[in-house]
Image (cartoon, rainbow, N blue to C red; front, side, top):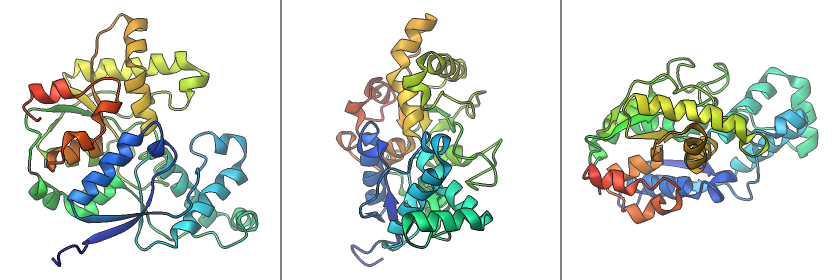
Amino acid sequence: MTPGKKELTYSYYPGCSLHASGREYDISTQALFSSLNIGLKEVPDWFCCGATPAHNVDELLSLSLCAKNLALAEEVKGDLAVACAACFSRLKTTQHHLKEDDTKRRQVEKAIDGPAPMDKPVKHILEILARDFGLGKLEQSVKKPLVGLKVACYYGCLLTRPPEVPDLDDCEDPSIMEDILRALGAEPVQWSHRMECCGANFTLSRPGVVVKLSNAILDSAKFAEADCIMVACPLCHGNLDIRQQDIEDNHSASYGLPIFYVTQLAALAMGVATDKLGFESVIVDPRPLLKEKNLI
């Protein structure tokens, strides 16, 4: 390989959460891809995709927000890499609807004053790691195997459903997160709530719903004797990490489960320093667990 040359290069849509409440997701994604010599170039002038609320308010607005971001991504070489599950879902949903409905496509193109790109591949970082880069190569790149770490892989609602939209993995029994974990040397646990909803963006409008649903997820992971939970969505991370103390108080429980982004664990396995992974930004500090497992 030519020194400094990237084997894989992607345009990159971080989305709002990764520049705010989920900043550690962005930091660890950049650090991981750099360690694997994968190029990421942020889409110029990107803006909010509408995430989970917009499509409930105005479908045309929701589709137009995503279509314009896809148009901006055309300016950057490479498939579009997305880390946030909500952003990934909305961008893929927009492409799906505009391919299926010419009337909607024309309305959107009028709204954004230009063509609506429908063919640029939109890839979640899980797909990039497991398929484009490859599990075998990922395993060979590991410098610090995560041996002894028992992890509950949490997919949530948006990564694989509805089945015809994200086309990431089996919508009812996915394995892509577990496959990546095994390549990193960790042990994925079998548990009942890996596809259940955490309450998503109800965290502010209906916190009681979030506390109830997220408690069931934490309880299931604890019952399976997981040391921690791995997610690929900043909404899920926020509900399971930030609200964990509230959940414990409301349900007289004691979980103490660190919530990791997939990129944090992968980057740790690649030998990236812990001060570059955002561990200091989360509520449930993962460093005591990692020290106990001799991983830091």
